[in-house]
Length: 255
Image (cartoon, rainbow, N blue to C red; front, side, top):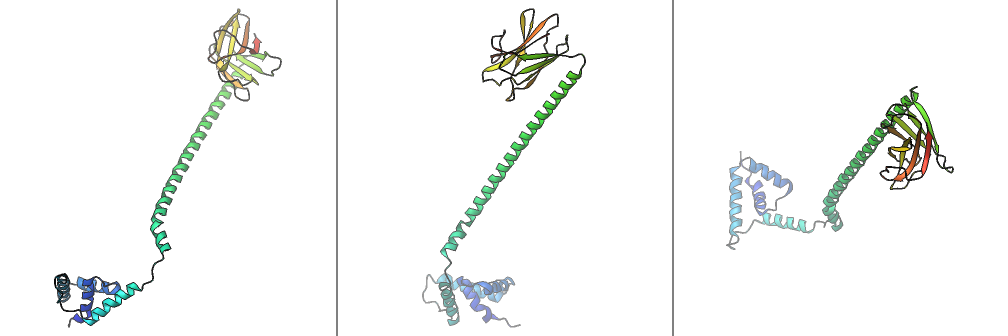
């Protein structure tokens, strides 16, 4: 089979010059990939000629066909429409915007994740508080329904206040529950203190605060033995409490 040397000779020359493009380039590369010794020899000869151009100006000129193809390709590249500078600008900064967008997306995901975790923590705390309040109310109801428990009413110690309280206590037991209502919220650095006075001697049962509504339920587990008449007071004291009542009396009762 006759080798089509002339078909590939011009392409090999253009290939050696680095101006062969497109389909012709792929076609020649595929042909050279078949191991054609004739075309490989032509390619080596062209590369040898090109490498000697820097040292000799007497080399044989290129064929008119090759010269025409070279000039045609150069002319085509020169007359190719220039790409829009605006398009090139946006194409160049596109990776920046893409990276910036990805970074913003990651930050937003982190913020959403943190907000979600914060919300879940808040809901968990609210759930725990509700469960604690429910358990406390259940214990109070069980305590109230116990027939052995006495209810001692505490009245306002100030005529201008509509506060009240109840002491639920099984006399002889150390455990009791103090319930207060409509008692004024107090400023920072102050606290309410509950007292049991027996034979003129006050005994502190502890301190407590109230919320904005003025309500609270306080568990007591250090009630004294019941040996006679008793008086009960709620006074306003410095934060931390006092060994003896010093402030205004807000609630008062007796047994």
